[in-house]
View 1: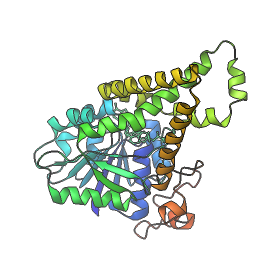
View 2: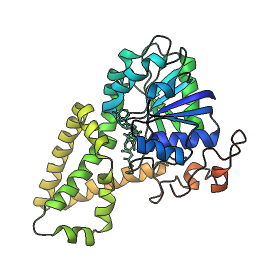
View 3: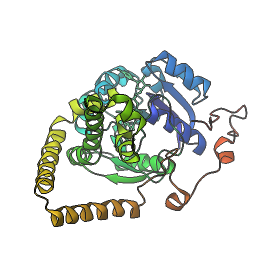
View 4: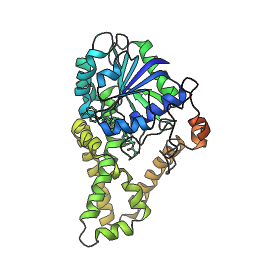
Length: 329
Ligand SMILES: NC(=O)c1ccc[n+]([C@@H]2O[C@H](COP(=O)([O-])OP(=O)(O)OC[C@H]3O[C@@H](n4cnc5c(N)ncnc54)[C@H](O)[C@@H]3O)[C@@H](O)[C@H]2O)c1
Ligand SMILES: O=C(O)C(=O)C[C@]1(C(=O)O)C=C[C@@H](O)C=C1
């Protein structure tokens, strides 16, 4: 699809993209940039790309597609760094979880002639670092938030890229994206972090007992609390208003629940739990639930589960085994 793809940032999203680009042969050359030298060395060891550099502008020079996958708070600095090296006609995208802020930081420095189309793959795990995998985007939504005047050919090309990575494409405006994500992603993370904090602070139950006797309800609810602190620090600062709005609504609803429990309003509680269960069921029917282990969409949901043999097949252009996938990751 592209002669050269420049990947700036090689965390869970960047490293998953590198793997799927390689597997699907979407680029003639994958250039990887990361500020962290250790991360870069590991990416090289895993053969995630063709070239590796700590200089983002080096990786994007001559690239037909540039994907910026860095913490939202770093997107402005990265945009400034790569701006002089972006090729005329290139597609530039970023994958930040808060669109309004990422766009405000990047758009002003994008040169004329470069197609800047922000996006957000709605998928991830609580893992950090280069713990990505090629199937991460399979049957997940990737939301694109095209800006006014976006070139439709470039938009279609980027959409096709994500489709070949396994994703379904949705489009919306950045503000609507941020409001929705505040509810379906940011609030759940805040609740998870908070409940772990509550448990850890309990004086009547020791920390070791919380850990030892963690029932699966607590474990399920708290998985998200293992997520990357930098990501969630950035989210709270960069999608502040929408998150505060959702927290206010959540607290209001929680107070209603609290009241129903205090007054023993069984019917109310039963109706409330029944309604919530129906919503959870509809998420499953939409095919948006995932196997707990490994986070790989089940064969039934995705329609395809590529065999490991297929995933590790060397590319004919790189018979030495460029982009060999480590099955343990
Ligand atoms: N992890 C997820 O579940 C997930 C899902 C969807 C979208 N996102 C978004 O994708 C982006 C990348 O997230 P991630 O979790 O893949 O990785 P991450 O946020 O941990 O970032 C990792 C990469 O960014 C580079 N980086 C960090 N600070 C930098 C800086 N100041 N300047 C330049 N590079 C810097 C690191 O060297 C590393 O290569 C974030 O904006 C995040 O909001 C994350
Ligand atoms: O399931 C998880 O572990 C995630 O945190 C993934 C998740 C989400 O909230 O759904 C987290 C942040 C991203 O912006 C998109 C996806």
